[in-house]
Amino acid sequence: MTGQWNWRAVKLVSALVYVSMFVPLLVVVVNSFHPQRMASFPPSSLTLHWYGEFFADQMLLDAVWMSTKVGVATAICAGAVGTLSAMGFVRKQFPVKKGLVIVMLSPMLVPPVIVGLASTMFFTELGWERSILWLVTMHTLIALPYAFLIVRSRLFLFDESLEEAAQTLGADHLTTFREVTFPIISPAILTAMIISFVISFGEFTATQFWVSRETTTAPVVIYTMLETLITPKVNVLATLVLVITIAIPIAGMALQRWLASPTE
Image 1 (tube, one colour):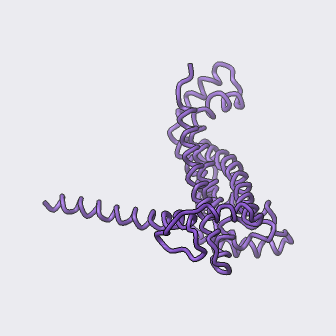
Image 2 (cartoon, one colour):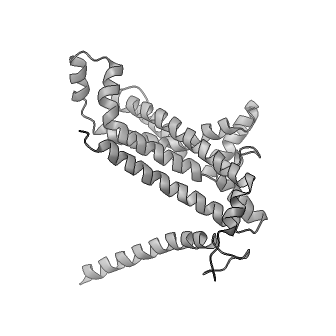
Image 3 (cartoon, one colour):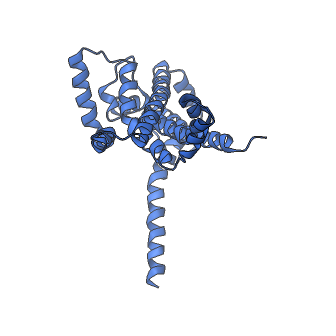
């Protein structure tokens, strides 16, 4: 009987967690269709008026486009560097290996506000002006630990005898990686890139230190609008960010299944 009550308590707590997560998101999405400037929930009617206002606002479109560009570049960079780093850590033995793993994972451990402040002071001392390159560099640093862990976990399960067999048959290291290693670990690399994009696209805490007027991202614009303006367009922007961050992983999973499906 006690076990049954414990299981019911677990289900109740789980339901409350999901409700607390998804109800606020639902309110934001529904209010993006609210006809009035001062939104209330539930709305008396629905309209696409604020979506028209949003797509007519070049500043908001530029912010979404900037977040998308930075996210794609971060996904590529973090995926590539994370894969190479993971292969080096798994395949090679070298001094202070455990210490370097801690350094690699440190962006996950340090609070984002500290990362943002410290990197801003560092780049300012170097005379590096805020730019999209600055954003991509720092977003890659933030996403890199996640990409590294994902690819490394797959490499731990990799059967190295497959590479040895390919090299025994005359394949060089590059051919072996291209024809044997990469096809097997590519789902993990794709997952790492998707996670890196989502992290970059939604990053705000550290990003607020790195943006300029020309490189403002969507999360920073959302926060700024909430602080300075009261407009339903912020709900539209938040809805669009939510849709993108959900659609990208779904598309990635579909691509993974397609890549994993047997070809005739």
